[in-house]
Image 1: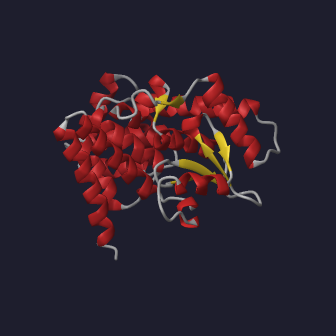
Image 2: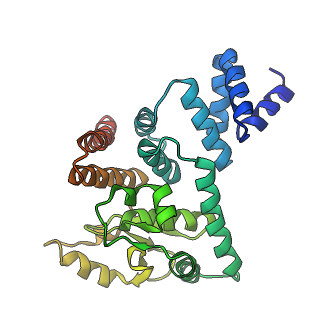
Image 3: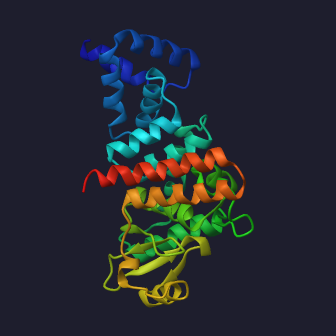
Length: 282
């Protein structure tokens, strides 16, 4: 394959036309290993939308399904928050439009950028994210239907503007990443939040409560109310794998509550996959 042929195929990966998509799949299938390698290169690249179109094409060529795709993601341990949450969501919504989701996230970040006057501190950036997410767009915690599994899927959170502490926190994090805001996921007991360690004293943000700012002391008092031994480790950043595993744990419980045993077992299996994968590294 010449360089021009390779670039031509790359340019078609995110083409919305079903006819182009079908022709591209036929061409890549005939190319065999070379076609798979080309898609893998795009799937590993920096372009977010192209990466997801390439991933979906790879799944189709390999006769994959969303659950198998997510298991492979877990096993490879090359974790990225946005990719992981999208994969989790595709398990329940296989037809989820990845490009549309990425564009919605980009649009939220773009609106935040319009309101930022640089230079800004991390706290000032968070205040702008709060304004856009919770005041202009109306995102908030779904206290009324807390155990609804849809609170855990990115497409449904964006559509309903309702979510759990962890999913609203991850949404907040994805917007912050696009803006370059130095924030981290905090898997504190009972209630997931966002933390910032860029200033002299760390501060925390609770997206479930429309971006409420909290000090470390206030966080420890919260934790003390639900556990006998709060410690500073509860306020440390969580890894991507810990965050994604906690989303799966919530889904296993919430599907069980709604008596959907097959989905509950599936997300429990993902939890076990995370555990087995990390035990192999010890």
